[in-house]
Image 1 (tube, rainbow, N blue to C red):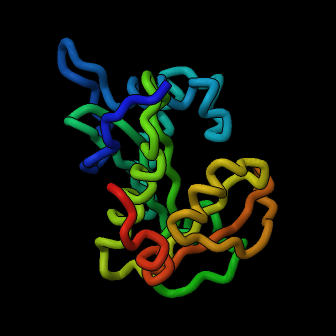
Image 2 (spheres, helix red, strand yellow):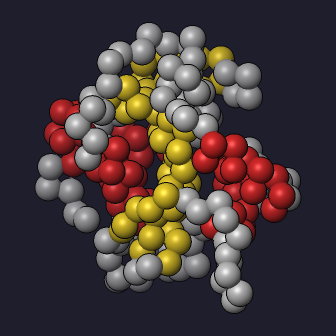
Image 3 (cartoon, rainbow, N blue to C red):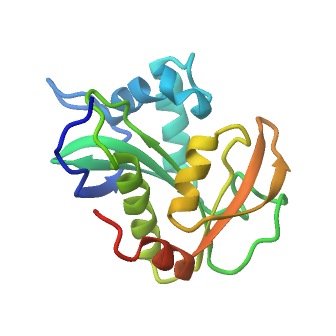
Length: 191
């Protein structure tokens, strides 16, 4: 059953790697609940312990070419976004990089009550956040070839499949979306 409450608006902030204060959950604790949820199977962290998530995101925070962010809805964590330089992380040597390329991952918190259009609103926010950087000309992604749900979302915001690539952890569908493709796909999109 869906509600009539509209998705968004969202805000995005850097993921905090420090432990939370008394009475609050840390970002790692929140993300641990998301990545280990059965709906997040493609994130490949289903068996991760909290310590594994803390270590993974501390490494991302320390990496000069990889960054993690928390998306908020009404001040509450709603999604995870990762931004990376594909010439250094994830796609290094696997595709023909172009100037202004940025890589992206996103993960939506498992819903308590589904909201129609919610995930589309999240990926739209992620893309707007990336393209807010004038240096970004194109976003590249590498979802699992069997993840047709995210491929459909990618297509809805302007991504075009380039080709399948073999990564160590999966066979992926390399896809890209230029600033112009995103604008064309989302003109008039409901936020």
